[in-house]
Structures are given as C-alpha cells and as structure tokens.
Length: 226
Image 1 (tube, one colour):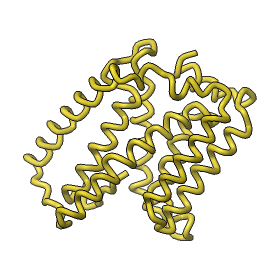
Image 2 (cartoon, one colour):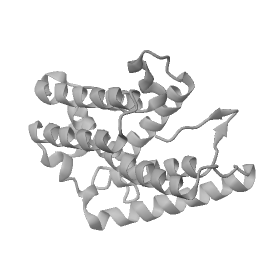
Image 3 (cartoon, helix red, strand yellow):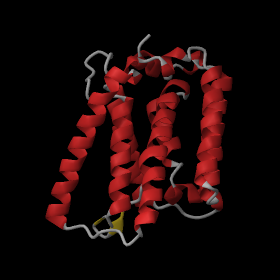
C-alpha cells in the first residue's frame, strides 16, 4: 500500500486503531504543553521521539512509515541538495531586495540555535508529521493542527495565554505546504524525485536557519522559527 492510500484510509475512522490514534494525540499535546511551559527543548524532543517510536510500534503497518522508498539514502540526496540550493537562491534574492538586518545574537548563540532549530527540530517534527499522516483521522488537517500547536506562539494557550493568530494562520499554511511536499514523495503516482519527507525536512530547516540568522518580518510582524 502506498503512502497516499494510507492517508486516504484516515478519512475512514473505523479503519483507524484507537490506541494508536489516542497515543498520537496525547504525545503531541504533551509536547505542546511542555513547550508552553518553556521546558528544556532537548529533553522535550527526546521524550517526544521515544513516544513517537511507541506510536509506530503500535501502528498495525509500521513498515508503511519507515519503509517508504523516500527514506532510502539513494533517494535522499537529490531533495536535500535541490531544496538547499533553491532556498539559498531565494534567501539571497530576499536579502538583496530587502536587506534584512543580521540577527544581533552572538555567534555561539547562533550555532546553538541552528543546531536545534535547523537540524533537530525539523527532522523530528517532519518525521512526526509523516507519522501523523498515517495515524491520525482526517490526517492532512489534524496533523497540521497538532504541528501548529507545537510552536510557542500558539502553544501558550496551554499556559492560559492568547495565541498569536497571525502566526497561527501562517503556520497552518506552512504546515499544509509541507503536507503537499510529502504527498509528492517519490514512488507515489505523479510524485517527484525532488520532493517527499526529506525535502520537507530540508525546507523546514532552511526556513528556521533564515529566521535565526536574520531579523525577518512581514508588514512589521516578526516571523518565528518553526
């Protein structure tokens, strides 16, 4: 069964395994609550990964998640190189047109943030999105919602604060775009060798790196790293 067929199955909730769905939702909400309370992000993501592994083990067809050809090394280099190259060209164009000021953070702070936000976070979150797309009912919508709730600007609702609605809308669009990138994974009908989950990780990381290195805003509204 292909990735797309698995996603289409999520629109038939009776086919979903309740324990997998409940654990998927609980895992995501626990991470969001930890983020809202500013818990150590490294510990949070380690905990999240362990629960994500448990979720996959309870899924009736775990090979659909980790066995897709898009994860093969010989399929990974092309999306990585193409997405990085395209992102660098776009960022160079934006900087040339707008002259985004460099972030005032120190070099040491930037290295730490880049490791966390441009490598760890996108790798874990996009693999989580891939898993959610198999395990949540109506997964293209629900996976995006759970992903948006992982971000401090929105997760603050778990701390009794109002979320940033502009960022929420932007993050929903970004999340749906990453779902489409995954939908076009190689090996799927009409898929592309340049797209898939590895391309989503690369684009996500490139965006976060850009926000870490430059002070970026649109119409005066600051953009946050995902």
